[in-house]
Length: 120
Picture 1 (spheres, helix red, strand yellow):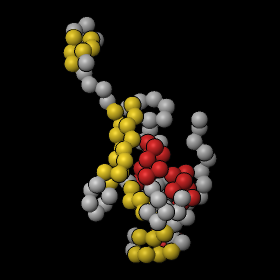
Picture 2 (cartoon, one colour; picture 1 turned 90 degrees about the horizontal axis):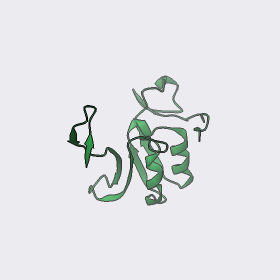
Picture 3 (tube, one colour; picture 1 turned 90 degrees about the vertical axis):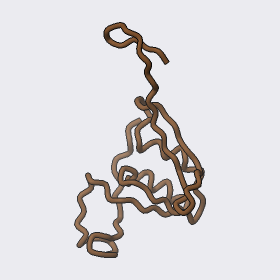
Picture 4 (cartoon, rainbow, N blue to C red; picture 1 turned 45 degrees about the horizontal axis):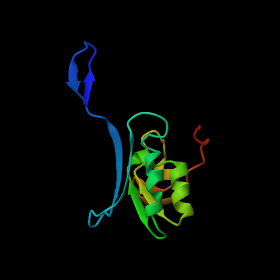
């Protein structure tokens, strides 16, 4: 794709995309994917997984990055009997001494409180 830069000279540029893939942990088989523009409504990293929710079935376990540890995605998955394991989001302050169920020194089960729904 040829575009003009700020000086009016032609240059080659490539579109920037957000891509999410869903793989099987044991075999690395590709189960599904979602592609969206880099910017704009509905392209945030946390909204892309909604496009691949249909690939999950009862009894599946989703192992995900800390960015996906939010109430609405977890509620959607658990309504379909899918369990989730996420690293704790850095913005969430937790006292592991007060977990619902203690599993280790810095490991435990917590109950997420529902936050306000996303705008839009």
